Image (cartoon, rainbow, N blue to C red; front, side):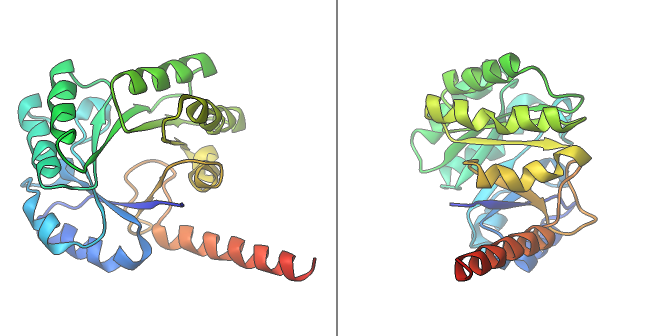
Length: 235
């Protein structure tokens, strides 16, 4: 199943809910970037949105906007899990106490835990990438997420090839690259076994370098589907 997650990064809850509703028909999952909100709250999104929700409260040290205390940072993630949100995202580099607390909460709910690791400078060696994947699995994640900065096609191929390792380890993996060389990986990953890919609500609202809008991604998807149908008709 292809999962298209649309990231919503707005300053107010009202704007975020409106943006999410505007693109709801194009999204399989909606990510609410809590770290971009002026006032963080979970209940309004649970009550006003119908698509499966992913809550992320990304700290500055992982490329996000949250600057407060760690305990306060994970509180809305715990609240979301308690209310049965579809997914919560926690960083691999988060303190052990955050991992423990959130894992205990998701075990009591239907929420799935995504443990994420980002490298905004480069794409490490295959050995390091596989090591990160193993660390994520050892931490007890339901789903792994590894995103790196690509400088050429070699970087992109290393990240996409992680799907083979993830299949062997039996852990669902979200993996693609940022940057211009990595744009193709955002579509290719779900065609190659990736659990999910991420899009922006609009072209000018990307939350990471190289992120496509959901409208563009759906257009590409439609062209691929049409091409596949034409090929079958001519066989």
